Image: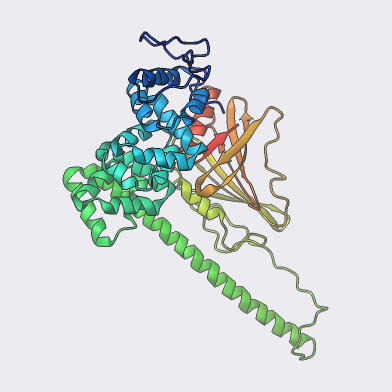
Length: 430
């Protein structure tokens, strides 16, 4: 996917002095002439070059500069967006170099650059810095809270440590400016007394924000309770299944004349498989045959809890064997998020995968170092969809479908799908 500003026309500089070559570079520098970084005029020439080159070309030039921090400050004063883009690309291409650079910057300055980046890039840069509390704390709650939300989406434990580092008087202020669901996830890791203190402080300054946060806390608590209940049910099923197996062996032994050994020639016909019914939330009490006992699909669903409050469960069967478990939800904007997990009895992704001839694709990276391939296709005329398939042994894929009968154009709908993915830690590349 090309960089968003690769084709954008950059305004010509109003300054006099350096000669701009046809490719946007400073004449002389492009030819390899060395510059003395300590010279103000040389720094100014270099900043102009970074402004006028395409983003990719500017990044290659930026990587060769030894004193990046000084040049970056001057560039940010003239073109903060370009400065932010260069740092964001450095995080992807050279994490060690990005870590070294960001630690040389004033925390508030680093934070201002991050606010111009995509959420996933902001979280990655804070992680590379190693001390996100310094950056977030230097920016004030209004600007620091979005960064804390991004960090929570990527690493809830680190986000909780950052919030815990703030004085009790500041925690409520930050949480009141955060995305409510991420704020609730962070606050739920605190002791009950601390949670009560935060809510009371927030009520005194912003009752509406306190009510929203309290409601989200209940949602997070209920979700955790459901997950705990599910694990208990799975354990109970495994114990019951083991007991049933023992009973079957005893019965078979009795039929074979009282021998303590099972009759290896006897066969037991499987009983009818109960088909899970659609529910407002995933509530399969018994994992169907052929699916992993820990059912990893459920962990994926939690990533979307800020936009998907309920899921419909739709098992797909062939005969008496469930071949896929499908969960779907529709966001407030009408976008469908659909997860599917294939049984070990079938070839994964051999059905249900789009096969349009005009589909385009590439690779993706997601939370927890996960990665894979994707296809951008037309689910219906003018209604795009994205299929994401994880690399490795995973038998899980998920899709995003644009709303039906939308008034938006096809490209706008594609952008809305990409934006939803970015907001949840996924990056697409051609």
